[in-house]
Image (cartoon, rainbow, N blue to C red; front, side, top):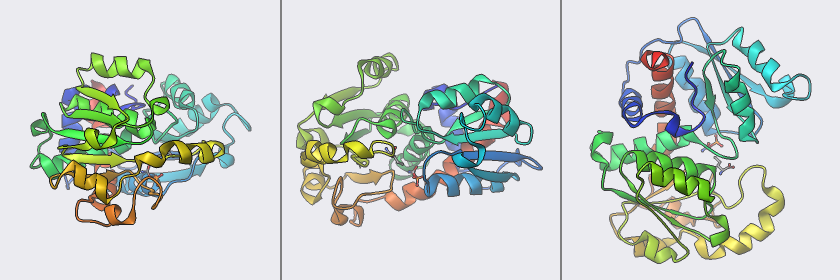
Length: 304
Ligand code: CP
Ligand code: NVA
């Protein structure tokens, strides 16, 4: 039984294969006559819509479920919800507060479980991000991304952890620029080092972005961290991606953001709407990436 809780649940070869499948506009109907349950403990625009459409394009039927409807660990246990949903669906996607929840779902080993964002990881976003880099810099082949570079500015969060792993798996250099208190924990740095990722961390943001192929940022306050918002605004004030920072990066640098953007906070309007921005193709790629992943997990990859 294959699950995708973090991007490195795929091998490097499998990541290349999923990215190739994402470009297949005549996808295998691996979900024909079947369903996929999509459980959300948090709001979503891109993830829900891209997953619903990916399931549809693979011949299946998506069923979206808000956490209160099934009452995970309230009405019944996460394990019992998982076994129930697996009685009707070929696959379960879940967006959760605590990463342990998707681990408990996958631990039932009844159908493949896909992490649609947890406090620790956002692998579907990372897939779309490297698909966007492949389109923009790799001439359509992820095999050619090695040697490229990306600078992530801001919070070392779920989006950054998955992005850094995905980029590193493809040989892309990863530079982090953020306040020292918001770096990835040592366990993640060890994981990146073990995967051979060329990875540096600094709080000197202009230095970090100089010469990179892409500058990436995400919100300063993730879903579930709202109580820390005031402190985070203060801590991240020097880490806004604005026109000056994009100029320090250089004219080759693209701008990426997983969205939703908090315009005027982590990024200015001039950058999101400016010539370097690729945030809309990046958002569109969420659907292609999701379709590629499900085609692999529910097709050939399921047997690996
Ligand atoms: N990027 C992303 O996951 O967007 P949503 O929260 O809208 O799904
Ligand atoms: N880091 C953000 C990403 C939203 C897509 C969050 O977890 O809220």
